[in-house]
Image 1 (cartoon, rainbow, N blue to C red):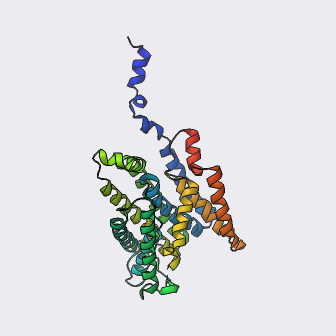
Image 2 (cartoon, rainbow, N blue to C red):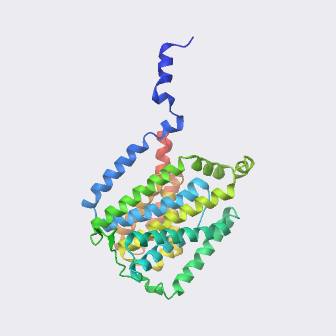
Image 3 (tube, rainbow, N blue to C red):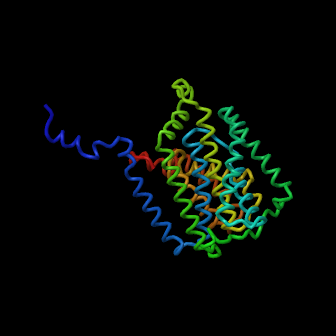
Length: 329
């Protein structure tokens, strides 16, 4: 006969929750803390610096969705970031579209480009997939460089921020920051819902053992295609917001170095973690910003940070922390 206290414990809401739901019960509190921090930070730190961190953090989160949860390593993600940047900038500058439409067009353009990349890339695995994405990204860079509508080496400058929905004037850096922060939190919530949904579980199964996933009847190619498009779209969203906030789209946005930076940000923070790319981005962008006076030594310091992270935090900073507390981060 069962003990009465055991019967009561089984009937409690906490006991009825699935184990994986209880393990991530702390994540809503982290979201609240992050939201509060984002509200306070623009009054303590230069808003444009924060905007850069948030844009590249979203870019890293999008990349991590592909690598950390599906195991697909792309060295061409700058193509999607740059596509969103250039299309949004051109739409706002040449067509005088409002910022919400310019950002939407940039996101859709990146998603369409991601579809094209995925159709060619997901047929391969491992290093071959990586090389395909790298080659395609270099083609995009060449097209942007030669296109008369992209401004060649000068890029698209003096991009108007406009008025959001015809109401909110984005001329102020602080106002623009809060808009970017709201979009960032919304995208982060979307990613959270995806990675802890059945869709995310299937992605992990593909990452951990693709042949077994196929044997279970999972349409692996369809899931790879879907996550590739979502990752590309979110990367384009980050690039579009960056172009409007900084009022410029440049070749740096589509350069291979930008693809390398997002890999570095993700690895330093923690591949396959929800908040790791944010921490990695904050660290790398801070080094670039506050150590800019050191010139080329900044690149050396970035490499040093990467080496130390690999040696001391093999799962990334947040990955190590998550392992120590025994809960996903």
